[in-house]
Figure (cartoon, rainbow, N blue to C red):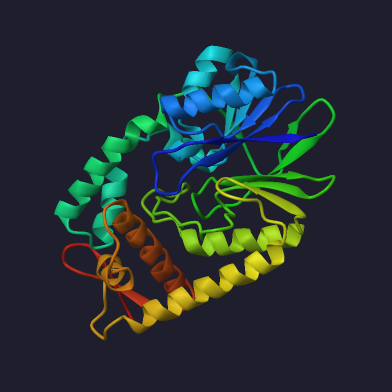
Amino acid sequence: MKLHQIVLPTPFYVGPVNVYVIRQDPITLIDIGPNTEEAFNALVNGLAKLGLSPESIRRIIISHGHSDHCGLASRIQLLSGCKVYVHSWEADFVSRRLDYDEHSNLLKRAGVPQAVIDAFEQGYMKISPYAGNQFKFEIIGDGDEIEFEKESLRVIHTPGHTPGSICLLRESNRELLAADTVIKHITPNPMLNCDPIDRRRRFPSLSQYICSVRRIKELAPTYIHSGHGQPITDYGEHFNNLLKHTHQRQEKLLKLIPAKGITAWEASLLLFPDARNEQRYLAVSETQAHLDMAVAEGKLSTDKRDDGSDVYKF
């Protein structure tokens, strides 16, 4: 089994996205890129270099539901009739991408002012076309085997960046397709999401992410193909650096919390004072994730303000 990487442009801050082609029967794409003409043309050109076309694709495996990884799924499915697979914990997000109400409620609990929530929603709707149209999909789960003519890839559920994020493991040489769970040049943001089991609750993204990267360490991968940027050949070092970064970020956050307590929004303004636009949303997501993990570890407690927002205090 040989993996062929195609790099597609995205309109996002993270930069180009890596998608992967496996030319064994059934011909499979791992992720698909955003719904833009630039990404589609780059995909068509990349496939042509391999003697393939969009119509050749028989299967798409979606690592997670963000638009830079699944935006072209509908278009390719219409051209090829291919099957698309997502993890069950990602299915609701993929099906309800334009429903902002649940997300708005999470932001209110984080203490985000209504005017800012409205601005976030406007930004979200502006980029929503990059997610493409709805597509038919089937469910995959942890431990499932993605079978090819001569080999297979094992699904590894790695919640954190999103609840239903997955990696794919090639058992024969411990090669891992890690999408946005492992990125060499940045720390993947644990995004603000509803819990897929109980949508009234907030998903504990950072705690889950730490569990996921520990699980990957136990797999002892020899070579990691990332969703963005360069591959990783020394995961042990990357893992240690990631834990160190997480610990330092949380310690910095805890030092900022006043005796009266603080909301995730207020804390994000102190922790990331220079964040603007979409970066401000990512700042709230990451701050909320750190606060939730601090509560889970017994470092903080929570209370409610009259407006329903969560307050964190010692």
